[in-house]
Image 1 (cartoon, rainbow, N blue to C red):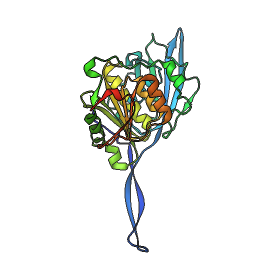
Image 2: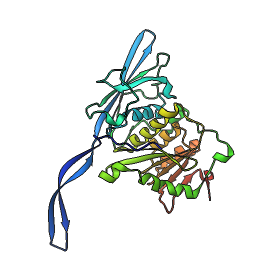
Image 3: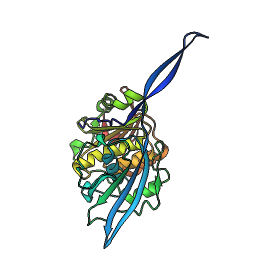
Image 4: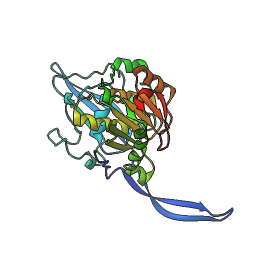
Length: 304
């Protein structure tokens, strides 16, 4: 399992005044400190060669929790259909560094003011930007608002992996165990209560990757990016993605683009999320806890 490493800049200590009530009119006032989650903008700029021209374009600005930027960028580019493989990228680095710096360094060590990152594509690769025609401004609560629709997802042509019979389903008891496994690794949530988590599991129930972020879409991108960074391409295996939130259509899109077969949320799925899951035959599960869960589509992947 990839360790859930949070950046030293992910949290900040602040002063607070706590009021507590004991009885009807008895109020206690106490000065103390609290850890809060940090939220910073991340600008992603793309650079590629088209013939003799070197083209650069700002692709996205998103509000995120600092740390694991490379994974976030890889996951976002894959889920938006810009790339199909990590091998199509020559380098990713903060713009106040040079492309000769080591990219495989621990992203959690990146300084807090490094909020602008550059993606340089391989010389033989021209990114597909036709499905994203205008500058994107994304926010921590809504993700890529306005770009998510079943029609736009169909243009990206997501395909779930074709699996052998012994990898097509998992026992219901395994689904119940995922919530506990994810909660045990939510370091930032335990410190601040201010982040979402996303975790990726395999068919054996092993936790492969987990990331936390103030935006649930960012947490998913970081998990997908970690997976793609290691495997380079979407693999032919049953993968389970779990999020500590409701399931929006955007999360469904990201899951499908990463080849995820089972998507689980602690909260409820939206109607559009369920429509998208049905369109591409994704198993979608909501209200998952250690005691129960609801399957809204794809029950055939779950055995009792």
